[in-house]
Image 1 (cartoon, rainbow, N blue to C red):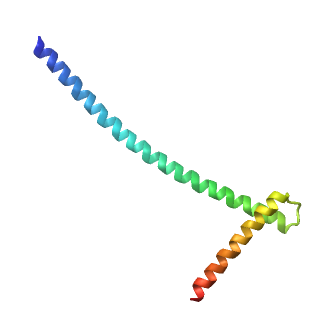
Image 2 (tube, rainbow, N blue to C red; image 1 turned 135 degrees about the vertical axis):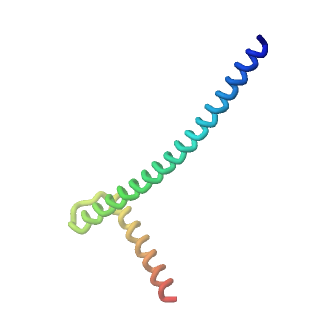
Image 3 (cartoon, rainbow, N blue to C red; image 1 turned 30 degrees about the vertical axis):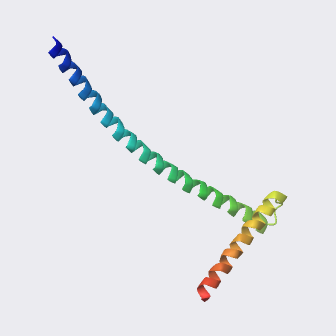
Length: 94
């Protein structure tokens, strides 16, 4: 009787241990998938920002009215681009 109970408990422990291993593996897979999805989301957000900037630049080029906030933001963005270009020119000329 006690031997049977011990065998049942041993089987239950083995089953629980196996399930724990399966769940850990599934957890690792889900973490990897989440990291991939987050990376893709970050890329998509960058693309959206790039397209927003294109639209703002297009509005400026077409002389459409742009809000002062967008105008200041575009001015800062253009200044940053100019600074990056200057750094690249300096680097390439060395």
